[in-house]
Length: 382
Image (cartoon, rainbow, N blue to C red; front, side, top):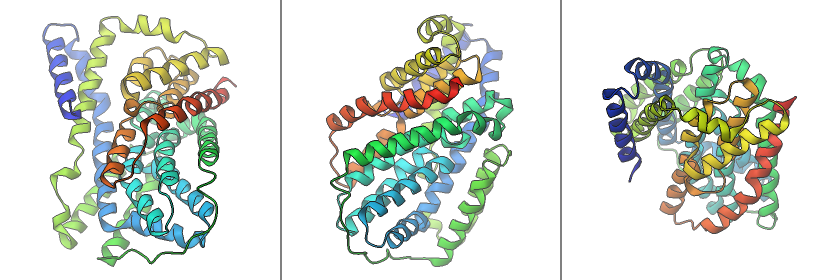
């Protein structure tokens, strides 16, 4: 069943839960009041990222990295990893998985290099680097709402060290796995063709202005929506054919909305007690490892978003909430369905005829995910 179908089923079940009184209508309205700014941000930032990609912003950034690397394969890989971290941090992990992946694959192919080290960098860093900022992941936006009313500085104070550790461990693991493919040099390829230079410049400027505003203390949906409106107007003038309904991530919104209500109904039925027994309690390191491990397992069994929503109920302190984020953001490196970004990434690679073995992916994830989660959780205990 596709994402939209799952979302529709969840919404139907949630409506039945409200109708029979399992989920009180007041609770459903409270959930809606909490999540509408988050879903509006998701829609707006997706439109911005899609239009920026259509303008050639990511292609231009990729070629700039090629020029800066000066023919050194390892230097190019580090540049791609840095771009993946920045794109994930400010534009969300789905942007990195969907829009950056084809760019780095094209860059690698033009340079005569294997695309696999670059493709693995985008998907792993899309997940682990999504701990960095509130806007990096839908789970972060939900958690930030519980930390001092969404203040990004409170989120950064809690999560900067776990994010940094998760990124460094991920980069080290990727270098270890791909060390042979990242040796040597390459010939600098020609620049990709730019069809509309003014459109590229304006789009890049809008993205650059939007990025710091996302962490300025404004509700993230405000600068994202503003940027989406500006780019929509610019494209309506310069390239109206690019404005199509598929720009809107309506399937993801439908799925998320149904999921929020379904988890609300589960909580009303007493699900928190069962989850609490599994996740334990306490802010000491062992207690945080327990809840982070529960989040890692939950994410790889059922997907990271429902795992977060379920465990949020038992994360009664900032440290425990941070441990849940570490588990659901940095942990989904094992199963293909652990993160929507991973499924989107694989679909893009398949369309580009890049073959990835899920067996290899899962075996590597089994080695790296527990290590990343365990180490990234440590700062939360101190």
